[in-house]
Length: 299
Image 1 (cartoon, rainbow, N blue to C red):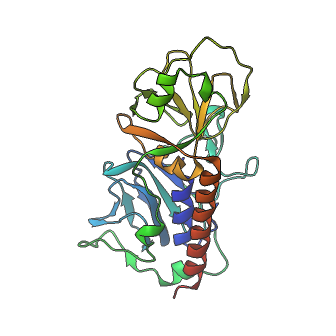
Image 2 (image 1 turned 90 degrees about the vertical axis):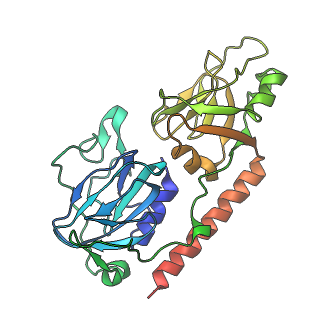
């Protein structure tokens, strides 16, 4: 859901950005480490700790064998990402190590994790720079938050502010009042939201007249308007096609903002041009590339 958070967490522990990690939503797992391991948490702050020692997001730390990583409740955001040096060893399915729950494939036998599951980490021939130099933390440690190989705040995703949307093919089908509301009003994420899509509640968005559309391709971030006048933002586990009016597309750089919203959170949309959205995406990729180089060269 928040690909940038997973990419950055992987970079912190010396992995390729696409290495498999864990996604935790609202609450996190309890993970017992059989061997010493370097870990980093990206995205939401779910109150992670080893023993009594808190682990802030965006830091890489070496957890000793016998240590236990636990999570509390969500302090900020919705989804946290746990990356471990080497990456989780799960099979490639269609070129990905992701888990797709609706179809029950990928990841660990196509399902969410359960109590007593054992996760295996890829072994590397030589320890990464992160593994060789990260400080240790064990279950007996207590005191202040520890951290190593942190990321400057200016590089981190901005999880606040309006979500920018590129106008879609069917935006003109709305009444003039509805077009104004889309970019001027607040919408609330409803409890009927999941990884397939966020259902939003707000002022009604009415079509100027009834319309029937052929199904067409949809993407992560497509803003659809099903019958009922409340929009849906399609998310990571979306379908591949849809026949509802497509009002817009969330700019790629703001997909992490959507991913970190919780039921009950309020979101506002702001219009952005395609050229500007593409420029912001390229700017973010250049920033991540510079971070990748800096981490590779760090002592």
